[in-house]
Length: 102
Image (tube, rainbow, N blue to C red; front, side, top):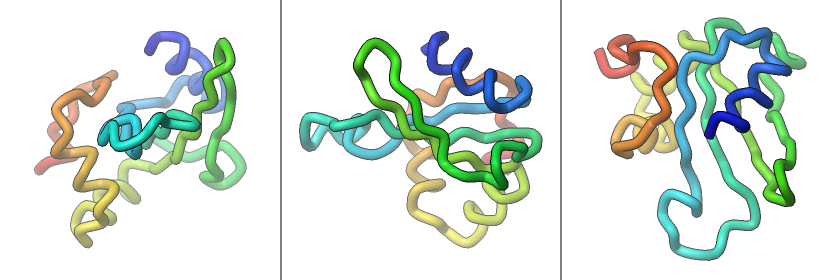
């Protein structure tokens, strides 16, 4: 996980707050072709919030970035991917996430 965080921080000016796995790697319903994460940032500064893609040791990672306000707005509107993040028991918390479930 540290290598993933380091790679994300390289493109986000170290403003990553939280990282949540989601998709097939969480459900384990198939062999994942890539590993999907939702990343929460203080601010979105990478090409207007476009998806971040990279590989580490032959494994592909797809990161969907959200600002805190976007994440909260989607949570309040019951966006399924955001609700999954809050219900899965193993987010990688970089800082306190009280704001996410309030």
